[in-house]
Image (cartoon, rainbow, N blue to C red; front, side):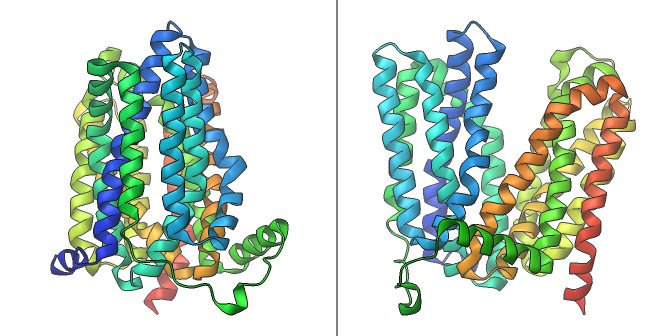
Amino acid sequence: MSNSIHLLRNKFVRVILISNLFSQFGIWIRNMAVLLYVMESSNGDALAVSMIAVAEYAPIFIFSFIGGVFADRWRPKRTVVWCEGLSALSVLIVFFLIESGSWTVVFFAALISSILSQFAQPSGMKLFKLHVKDEEAPICMSLLQMFFSVFMIIGPILGTLVYQQTGIGVSILLTSVSFLISAFVMLFIPADPPVPSDQSAEPASLLREMADGIRYVIFNRELLRLSLCFTLVGLGVGLVTPLSIFLVTDRLGLPAHDLPWITIPYGLGEMLGGAAAFAVAPRIAPQRLLLMGLLVNGLGILLIGLSSVLWVTMAAQFIIALLQPAIFIGNNTLVMNHTEQAFIGRVTGIRTPLMTGSMLLMMSASGVLKDAWSLAIVYELAGLCFLAGLLFIVPIHRSRSQ
């Protein structure tokens, strides 16, 4: 724990946490306000609601890799600050358009923020590579995971409360202010290092840099294994994400409004898991954290698919969430440790759509598979995806141990 507290003396870490605090406020207020506003304005139209997800996920496939390439070209601090500032500006424009009476422009807020995130996220990883030592990376990642876990619980509550009390106009305005403060705080991180003289020449073409990034991942055995692992994890997550309501109605024989009985243990587990990971991350190797998380999550999903007893399902949900931070911390730490700074943006840009794409593919197929087979079989298949992903991490664990 002393190492974890010592990390907070790092000015970069303190600034990142404060910036993320305001950014998360803005994200959750925007997400819940857009969702509830579209539900009200469209009279619950399913197509309109689904377009929110399209606006959020489509840019990942179109801009993620491109954003990674430019993140490797541009100075990371400047990129993150500009992306946060432009997000604030775009949301402010949406505010004025809403005031003029056009409700459909709320999709624009989600779309632009998602596009800018594809440039900001790989730049953020570059900043971590620059300012956090490799041995401190697991602690830093665990701190961020604990932070995000808290917002996974309070974010929807906060966003819903703000929208219900103030309406869409003020909610969007608060989102813009939150992003603007986040950008301002990021100005206080240490300056970007000067560009080396051998890199200041005219950069290679975009396609050439993309191809270099793909080759880098393919020929780096650890990164390739991590990418294949998380493609399988995405398949597993996508299979079960839309089906939790059917656990309550089909497997447990309870009414749909009893869904909180299995979501509350999950939320508590994620919060406690984040705190526990923050405490133990300095003493456990990242590959071991990742192995533990994948094993427990895979077995937990298998158990949920077989369970027809409420307390067993609740316990499995709690244990799965308890070890999920270990997956996040182990994965991000290993990626940072095995990636050269010059390629961190492209590596992030390649891996993000792999997992997201596999997840969305299975989300679209999970309902069909449930009807064709059964809920239990779909959950067993998802659990096996996690365990199959684990097999790609075992060689990394062995090589690091040796």
